[in-house]
Image 1 (cartoon, rainbow, N blue to C red):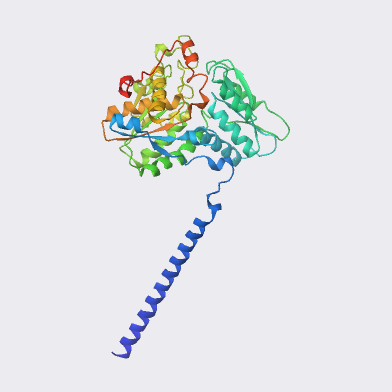
Image 2 (image 1 turned 60 degrees about the vertical axis):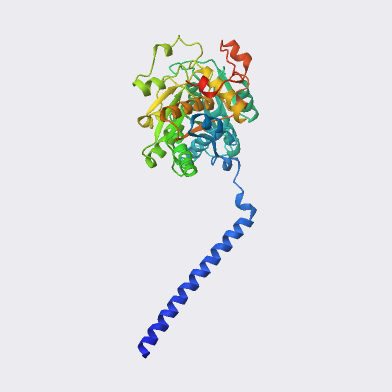
Length: 397
C-alpha cells in the first residue's frame, strides 16, 4: 500500500472512530439521564392544584361499544380536580387575565361569573389556589350540592331567579354588573364571561383537542358533544378537523335548546322554545350545563364544522345514566348522559366499525338532588324507570 493510501486509511479510521465515540457517549449519557429521571420521584410532581388539570384518560365505554359494534370512547373529564371539564376553562380564563395585567394575585381582586354551577366551582377552586376571591351568580333552581360546593370553596354565592338573557337581572348580566361596579382600592373585579371569552375556546383548542388526537393516534371517525357556552365543542372540533379531514362532528342538544334547530335548519327557535311556553327555564329540560337559546362567540367559532345534530329527550338521558351504572358502574351527570345517547345515535347513523369520541363532563355526584333524584323527577312529571331487562337499543331510537 502506498504512503498516500495508508494516510487516507488512517484519516478515515480516526474520523470513524471519533464519530462512534461521540455517538456512544451521547447514547450512554441519554440513557443515564432517562434512568435518573425514572428513579427520581420528583419528576411526577405537579405544581399546585392547577397542575392536576387536563390529561384525563380516554376510556372505552364497553356496554355502548358492544351494543353498537362501534368503539365509543368517553374522555373522563370528571377526573379533573374540580370534577368537570370546566377546570380547563377557568384556569385559562384566569391565566389570560393575569397575562393581560387585569388580575394580580393577593391584592383582593375578585373573579365574577354567571354560571349554572360547574364553571363556578372550577373558578372558585382555581381562584383560591392562585390568590383571588370568587363571586358566583347562579339561577336558584340548580342542584343544591352545587351551591354547597361553592360555599365550601370560599366563594360568595348569589342566587337569582331564572330569567332570559335580555333581562338585566339574568345571572350572567348580574355577574357582569357586579364586576364593573367592584371598587376596593387596588383590588380589581374581573368578569370571566365564559360564554363570550375566547380563552374558553383556546383552552380546548390548545389542550383538550390535542390530548384526544394523541390518545387515539388520530384514528377517530366522529366527535359527539353537547354545547352550553360552545367552547368545548368549537375548540376540540377546530383542532381535530385540522388534522382529521374525514371527521364527522355531531351536536347533542337537550329539549328547549335552540342549537339543534340552528344546526339542522339554520333557524334558532322553534315554537316550543319561545318564552312562556317552556315548563322549565332556561331550557325545557332537567339536564344542567348544556343547551342555550342564543349564539355565543365560542359556539360560532366552530359552528361551520358541524355535520348534524341529535335532539336527546330527558327520558333518554335519564335512562342512559341508569344504564351506564347498571352495565359499566359508570356514574355520570346529566350532560354526560346526553352525550352518550347522542354517541349511540351517531354509531347507528355511521354503522358498525367506527370510532366515536365524546366527553364525560362530570359525575353524578353534583346531580344527586335533581337529575339523580327520583322524587324530584316525579315532581317534574317525568316518570322514568329502566326495566331490568331493557337494553340500550330499546330506549335510544
